[in-house]
Length: 390
Ligand code: FAD
Ligand code: DHB
Image (cartoon, rainbow, N blue to C red; front, side):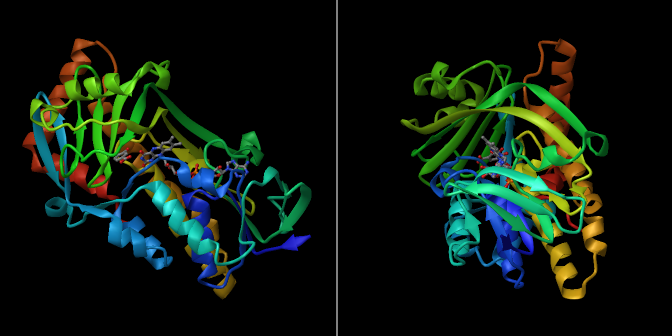
């Protein structure tokens, strides 16, 4: 039977980053991942990092390529009624964002962790957590055809929304708050130059659209779509036509189209699990909470949880003090709820929810208020770049 200090379930950004930060402090961990390394690195997901996330990645020693290839963004556009309002993040908050694909981050993290043989086990099956509320938790799993067991001091559930960690917490010890939105996002990745140098969030009667990017030659676009739609119903031509209709004419004229490299539909959901701890099991990132992607908080919240938990574990092993570990859930949830509120608000501001004329007028009035008020723009900017930790 193998022993480690921290057993980590899931090698998404949360699991690998936690393992890397602990390793730099001499704390041993083992990451158990269900999928192959290639599969995890190929998933096209988030693409926008808050500066606190950037700093955490640099602290972890994995920021080299990110700082060279990432694109610094000092603002973004909110487009509506065929016009545009720029949110000047730098002027309003002093902070910027970094465009860097989650899959690139996964590559950097996996490459760094591969320097420690056995620190990450890929393609692990049937992970089961045992005795989480005791002083001697265990994980059992199947790897390379053999059933194995790992003993640890602590468990980190970094296994995302569909993971196993959240499910081991007894129902009566867990509260879940959920909102399911009546639409999804259809995303398309293509090797075409972005239609604008900054991101464009567009509200239109036909539905929301987002123009994002991964590099000067690679664009990532999204359109709001019905939940029942399938990717097969959206050939590239239909996607480009719809996007062109939803952005102001000024942008539409600049849209360069090309064959898609990837297309996928994500449903939109808000979910918060309370508490984020059960005995010696700590839930991290999407395992504990989901936000709709509007405003790009998912990955950044996951990194924020890792920041809080890694500091608490380091404090425990350095000074044998469990105070920060006991505060983990409260500290993490304080940020989670604020980001959940922001993602919900930004989703509501920009999407087509109903044909109710009153609701539509309220949305237009709120957008006009935003465009005319520095206070409202600053509030949006402050939340977008990420609230401070103190
Ligand atoms: P994950 O990245 O989900 O990682 C969890 C890992 O655990 C996975 O590798 C999974 O294979 C593994 N795992 C699961 N179950 C088990 C098990 N039983 N045993 C072992 N391993 C297991 N956020 C944004 O900010 N902007 C976006 O545009 C955006 N787009 C997204 C698109 C999609 C399709 C999805 C799913 C998410 C998107 N997100 C986006 C959210 C963002 O990607 C997540 O918030 C982020 O990945 C969270 O990281 P995580 O490490 O907590 O979880
Ligand atoms: C991206 C996704 C988002 O949800 C967002 O708000 C900004 C950018 C992206 O995938 O690039």
